[in-house]
Length: 459
Image (cartoon, rainbow, N blue to C red):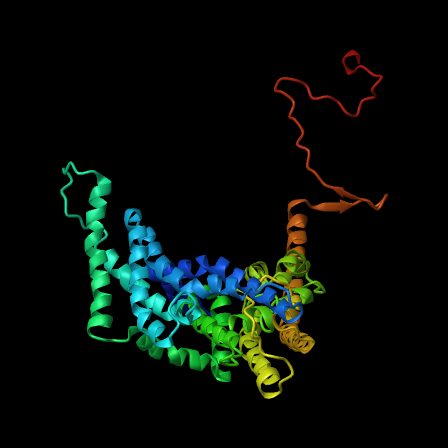
């Protein structure tokens, strides 16, 4: 285990951190995180549309879902080159770069939109179904704009105003992007959109299989146990999960592995790794440190925020890293069993990405089924059973460590302040040496044996 931890700490983790801080990865992650408000609103509108089944006069909120969640690929195509220019400190070109990315994406999806017979803004290619195409076209645009970030037609001594120079300087990279898309798709006839989907379809197929589901969740827990954000996997996993949810909402499929299922309905109760059971177990620990951490992490964990407990006890702790890895393997397989093989709980067909909603409220809102709440309860209990033995071991380790530190502190106190016990009173008193002053030279020493009433000089 020590060899594994040494490799993880000094080889694997630095490489993952390097990837996580890569300019292109950061721009991609920033873009996906910036569209989350629209995703959350889409989830809310999707929930409100359920009331149409109860109240006949209730307005149809599904249209608002199309104008929020149904536009996320458009936003991503704009944001990737925008954020890349921001990171490169080429702020004068960021808006131009974003608009060029948007144009290239629209050129790319136009054949699929026309073939679908749904021209307009309600085509699935503009929503979650076009995420991979938006990422690729955004990266292509960002790459071109990066090459020409410092390009200019004019000399520094030119008298032309800066804003006019920026117009002309931006024309060349924008022309390259637009002409590339037009020539490739309209002139040559390459269906770039379906080509990108074909390349990434194996990823979507793999994560929808039980082994792929477990592998994806294990990787999330594995890198999280080293303090690396799971968002490093978002460029690959989130588009596939959102596309799967879009097919569920449209009634075209019955995919289990979606953002709603993982983060809002069944799996990660308390955050990635299902850490709410761990926090509750900490409240009953013998270690003062664990009890304090459990109290501090309880409120955030109820809202599925588990950074306090992960970075306070789990990350780089061999005793608790192992059960976190096991959560990523056992719980997905258990959920597959309870929804696919034994259909105890339904598969969510409503977009619900409000991951901060406490369980089991989010479970019921995303499914409307009490059997789903039962499945979430089973997942919760199994998660607690995985955490429990490892936490007990770690709890005993901390108790012994605290006792050893207390004994060491007591020994140090005894060494610095020796004590003696009085034989008469039985009280402990501190022994101090008092240094007596020597009498000055040529001065007769006092006779301590003489009576205090006798003057020795008169004898």
